[in-house]
Length: 94
Image (cartoon, rainbow, N blue to C red; front, side, top):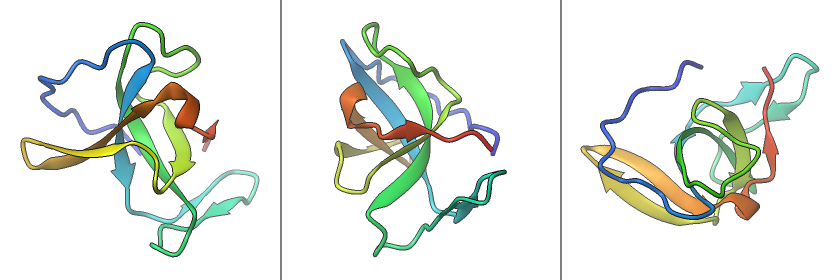
């Protein structure tokens, strides 16, 4: 999935990241299926911004995170999550 460019006036600090959740079921090349349903414990999303101390991820990375992680924020009609880098579970390689 190509990251959608959000006009961010939100710059995360320290080890915080901004993630735009995706609402689609994801299947990786190796056959891992990540469901998008609300019953699933995890969600996927695209990193849109990172703080200076958020190592190991960059804008455009697809990531896996617990559905209850972080804080919900609305920016210009788009819903994003702001969370600590440590709340991310994995990077997803399609």
